[in-house]
Amino acid sequence: MLDDGMTKREIEGRLREADGARLKELWRVADETRRRYVGDEIHLRGIIEFSNYCRRNCAYCGLRASNNGLRRYRMTEGEIVSAARAGAALGVKTVVLQSGEDVHYDARRMCEIIRGVKAECDVAVTLSIGERPFSDYDAMRAAGADRFLLKHETANRRLFAELHPDDDFDERIACLKELRDLGYQTGSGNIVGLPGQTTGDLADDILLFRALDVDMVGIGPFVAHSRTPLAGYSGGSSELTLRVIALTRIVLKDAHIPATTALATSDPAGRYKALQCGANVIMPNITPTKYRALYEIYPGKAGSLETPEGNIARIRRMTESLNRPISTGYGHTLKRAVGTPPGR
Ligand code: SF4
Image 1 (cartoon, rainbow, N blue to C red):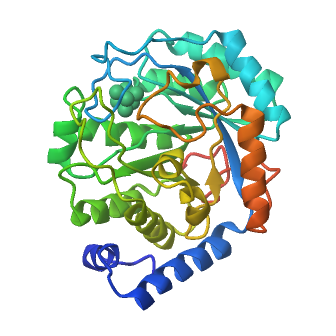
Image 2 (tube, helix red, strand yellow):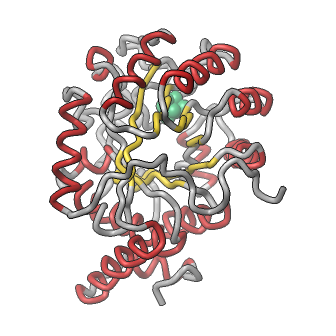
């Protein structure tokens, strides 16, 4: 049965499905579930990649600290607020502040940036800045941050340890729980097609999303970067990524699920397809163009040379062709009243 109670075995079976009729059924049920639980509206989350410095060494990522071939940059508070203002003028109702794990932006700096964005723009603020002490998360939430993205990347502990030589799976999950307790709307996510990953691992990812009851889930294919230990490995399949998106929609029902840029990078029609099998969010890049090419987690990122205006105009044309409206609301979680930490 395709429903929110699917077992690991059932999910794995659907990830490997070879029967065309059953595959069609997966796309149809995922799209119907999306329509029923989150509606037709598509939410725009404008990403500002404000620093490409990172203290970590994730094996798949071009921003890893030991990649000496990358020119590093940091945006000033003024530049960040100005990029947020430009995004808001283009209709963006959520700004995602994303960076490597860059401790230069300590809690005090981050709080100033969050307050600056909130004071100037009518937007929700999502942070995607990695693992921090609980006290930092607490201060940034008090400064007005609404949401936090922290992908678990893979639920396979052995693979997680291999790919994250300086990180710990349990600590990451503990961070996600702390964030929820502080009242953040939380997002996790995974990478599809990592070397050594199995369909069983992907089923575990989906079951972990369900166990964590996350508000948002980002799912993208692995894209190899030449300056990482995973250089030369084949990229993840966009078809398999779409199956993970569809099954995540069916199992989680009301989470916000983006049609990711990584998917658009591995398949030019990837976002268009994702919006028809469960996705309801698009994350246009609103980083000033001069920094774009330097935020190279993986190479060939879709739209990396496009202006924010051009990027959003293209997204609007795509949503119009699907007859789906762009939301004019913040697109908060649908799971509970915003601002109320679960269980309180
Ligand atoms: S995935 Fe994130 S934490 Fe890991 S190296 Fe890249 S930017 Fe840093």
